Image (cartoon, rainbow, N blue to C red; front, side):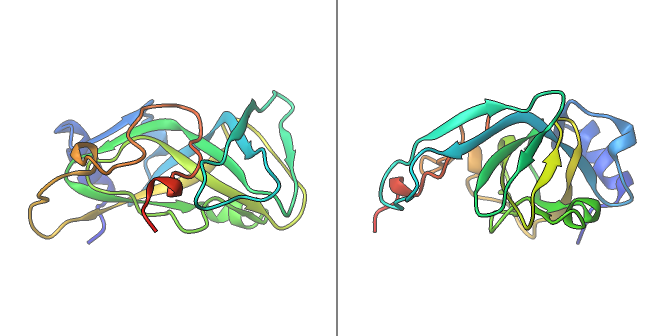
Amino acid sequence: MILSDRSILEAIAKNDIVIEPYSRDCLGTNSYDVHLSKYLACYIDEIIDAKKHNQVKHFEISEDGIVLSPGKTYLGSTEEYTETREYVPFLEGKSSVGRLGIDIHATAGKGDVGFCNHWTLEISVSQPVRVYAGMPIGQLIYFMVDGQVEVDYAAKSSAKYNLRTPKPVESMMWKNSF
């Protein structure tokens, strides 16, 4: 079951959902709009190796924006820091963003109960497109969980994305055993 605007407001009042910064204007009927931060990153190496810690170069979007090019993976982040203690957050792209040919995540749209951070976006584009810091980029949708969570994400020793940072975080696949 997806939370309505009233349910999201109730969860915020109980601190079960935290959104910083928060603006009532960003609350939709059953979602909350999030914005592209000024931080982007790209992998340094041409070939990315899933077994290695692939380094990224961070950079900032200027006031004039930045043109993203096809064939490149850009890591972005949301301006908003979020926490969810009782709900499963899903991040979806806004339809206006999709209509510009921008995908904001390849596979990682679902968060975990207990996720506390800025969201890293896996941005790809179908043609060159200029983007701007602060532009609406996605929307968070919250789902109810059936039953109690034994260990939330923030408390898991195996969690790889717990370090709070406003900058996008590169893949930590290399921490897995395979």
